[in-house]
Length: 148
Length: 225
Image 1 (cartoon, chains in turn orange, cyan):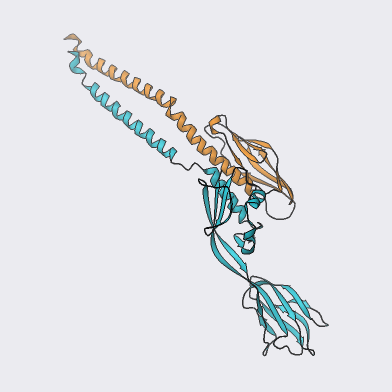
Image 2: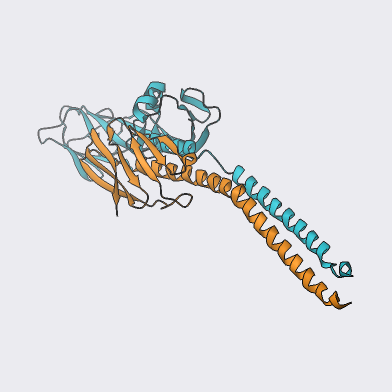
């Protein structure tokens, strides 16, 4: 009869430890499986859109008209995809998104007139993206400029 | 004795069961939301970009932004699409106007389609022989951007000047004779006035003008790859 008073203490301790174990197990389970997978899936989607937006702005940066030009177009881009910075690379007419998570790498072909030369170059997402087009109407050059 | 007091443990178990079920429902919902997103942003962007290039102000097919010149539509073919618009070798593209295929490269089956409303412009050639009863004016019934004025005045009449809406467009004090190409404003109705010594009659002036007729159409650009 003396240890009857222990009963609620044992019960509460048992319940509390089971709850702690459950939460810990559940957290470990989620953080090792679905959460990173979801981050990668969402990051891939975002990366694809980032690349599509960048490609659209690069294509739209070519001015109309028949004068010699030197235009700089600033494009607002997200600084991170899946919590890390990324790089946009121009490689022989293709725009490549290079991300530390290799599953998020994407590339697309730029639809540009034949009179535009694309200079290879890199842009990192910590900079502001500036698309610069310069030259005479028959021979324009396009390149990416990072501007801090 | 102690077993009697642990009545809250089954309740805890049921609560955890419910919580686990809720977490799984949430996971399935999140997975479904990610799976149902549009995954062809790049194809879509390519289609939008190509349609913008096709309808741009100084594009090979257009007379101005979003107005396609009917006579140039035939010049669009697979080779032009590749060379002028910089398509990749593995990209399949189809350009349709009101359901009629203008040009196709490859066979875009699963591509993204962008539809734009454009105007298709046709230039007609119309002629007019003003009668000049009681006035020296001729008003063109439709708007045009150029007029071919053929002057063959009677022997005793000299046409020294032609004005379009008050602006002098042709002037020769010694007398105008022959066919002249006159640029006029396409944005207002043109009235030509002839400054002459002597009278003009039917047949002294023949005008050929080029009114445009536009019809709305739907341009469909499908890109796959």
